[in-house]
Structures are given as structure tokens and as C-alpha cells.
Amino acid sequence: MKTTSEEIIRYADMFAAMGTESRLRIMQLLLSAHPEGLVVGEIQSELEISASTLSHHLDKLKNEGLIEVSREGTFLRYTASTSALQDLLGFLYAECCTRNRAIKLKHIMETCK
Image 1 (cartoon, rainbow, N blue to C red):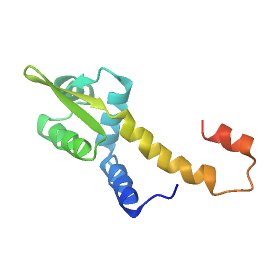
Image 2 (image 1 turned 120 degrees about the vertical axis):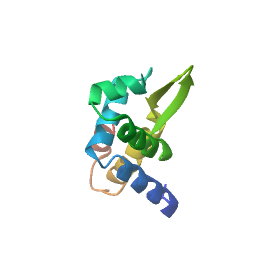
Image 3 (image 1 turned 45 degrees about the horizontal axis):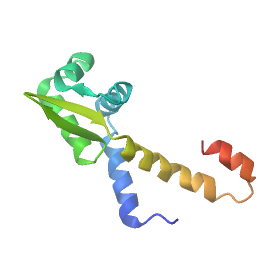
Image 4 (image 1 turned 135 degrees about the vertical axis):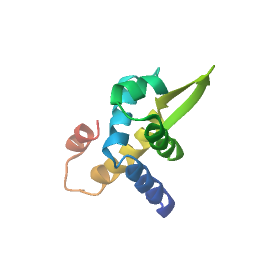
């Protein structure tokens, strides 16, 4: 299935959102805490990022659909959006697994696991 221009733009925006060290570390941390996620204070403590800077990074990741947020009383809990990440990785692997017709089917299946 061919990827549309809109999808490519969406994926590029997702990659751009993760394109800083701090945001990539946030994603890594949230994935390590999956599926429960972490509250803001836990993220801040773990990564030693100021509250305002962390808020900015979390907003960027949330706006691109890479993380989800839920309110628990006075706390905000963040979780990685595994479905968004699966879409992103699927986009990368789709071309890998369909473009090169010279690769045998068995090798393709092993590569795409």
C-alpha cells in the first residue's frame, strides 16, 4: 500500500518531535514504564529537567500523538502511544520489505519481524 503525502508529513513531524535528546530520553523512559506510564514528577526526577522545559517537551510529543496524558487527581500521567510508534515503524519497514523484489520471501519475513 502506497503511503500518501499526508502520512509522510505526519511521520516526518513525529520524527522531528523526537529529534532532540531530551524528547528521545522522555520516549525511552515512557516506553520503559509501559503500560503504566509515569507522572510528571517521576519524569522530571528521572531526567533532571526543569518543570517548564519538561512541559514544553511533553506538549510537543503529545501534539504529534507520540504520548498520551490522563489526569489522576492533581497529577498528570503520561504514557507512550505504542500504536503511533507501531505506525511509524511500520512506515519505515514497509518500504524495506516491499521494494527490493530480489530478496527472497523468507528473508523478508525475518527482516520484518
